[in-house]
Image (cartoon, rainbow, N blue to C red):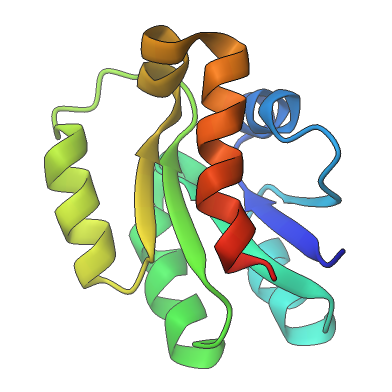
Length: 131
């Protein structure tokens, strides 16, 4: 199975890791680390990019990654509860317009479905993207 690059803060990465047990994950805590991994690794099938990644620079990363690595799907996520003024719907529209294949509000998914249900929902999303 190819790897999933997780571009997130440490706490965001740990939360995503707890939901994606069994998936080979590569953490990236800065834009430079994430872009470097995309440049030098051929075994990345998917990117999870958190809203709060590298001091809220998700859109900077999304623009750079889609411009250089358009064949690798990027899923943008809200990985931790935050006081962001933007709603999930707004973030979904904006991230997809910027090149992401999906946006997932992971804390809301866990709140609505429990951790096991959220894990199943994420698996349904990921399965077609990493085959």
